Length: 139
Image 1 (spheres, rainbow, N blue to C red):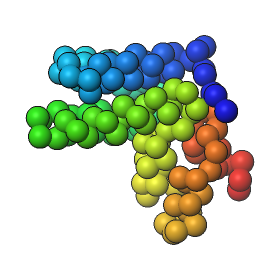
Image 2: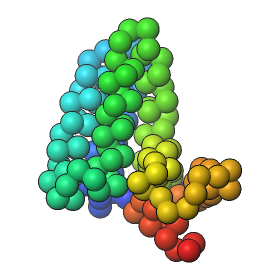
Image 3: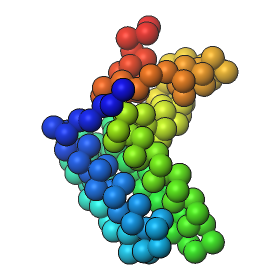
Image 4: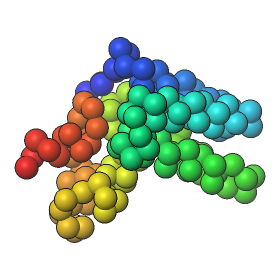
């Protein structure tokens, strides 16, 4: 099921980022640098919009930026395939693996860490908004 959210500014950020990462993984290093730059812009935009750095959407973008930075050195550039594929999944079907990982941080969850929580986190259907909103409906 497609989840194209073209009315969302965040969706457009992710779409352009996915395009830049795709450009990078197909041999153009500048794509990685531009994706990092756009992610910094997106992070600043969401810090301002959410009025703080602890908001869940800000955390997701921060850790996404960290992943892009870790993958920048030459020997690690194969890692860019992970956010490239993941970002396309986010754009097309709304499945954001990074958001699901971030939702497992202790300060972002009420439930104890368990195998059942991992299953619920990674195997649940994509939801509009963020993964935490989807879990709120399960409580």
